[in-house]
Image (cartoon, rainbow, N blue to C red; front, side, top):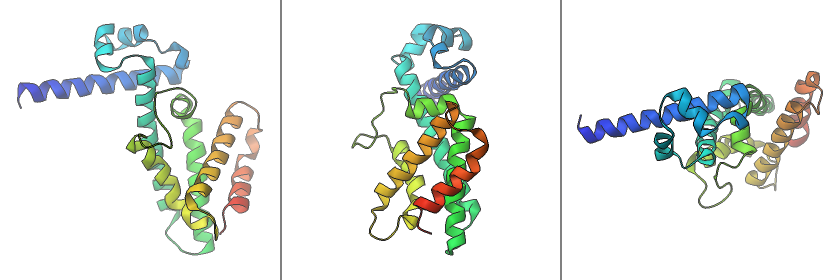
Amino acid sequence: MSVQERKQRERAERERLIVATARELAEEQGWDAVTTRRLAERIEYSQPVLYSHFRGKREIIGAVALQGAAELAAELRGASAEAGASASVEGARGRVTALARAYLDFAERNPAVYDAMFQLDGGLAFAAEDTPEVLKDGFAALLETLRDVAGEGVEPGLFTEVFWASLHGLATLTRAGRLPVGDAERRVGLLVSRLAVV
């Protein structure tokens, strides 16, 4: 391994450590606790080293959001695949239900990451030409399952946006204590039965 390759590997490892530490700190204490000073102390690097990787907290939030989007996409695909490939009505309903549950479970298990993805300014473009590929793939993970249940004459991408917005609303309202926790399964069932044409 050349010196250049070793330096690139070390740089990538420092960047992963910064992102993982920011994520951990945000999940423990919230995003207000994530400062470059605290990150530098936790990872035992100087603040200038942090700034050599990220220009500030906004870029760190963006990096956490991209990581979260990749994880969410994998979980959505996994849940849909696990629910089965049956072309029947029950199979389609099962895949959409599994997708919805996986989305809401991810949001509940990873509140700080979810905030980085959808609530905070990480400097990422959504629904634009310069949207990062990992974010586009996250949307594609939803679309892959939902395109089959959009209904005749309904554009699948638009349907996916509405379904996603519904999931996001359920996730944020439940987390904020605006919806009773005990009715989560009934909400998923209602969302699937009323929006998805299966």
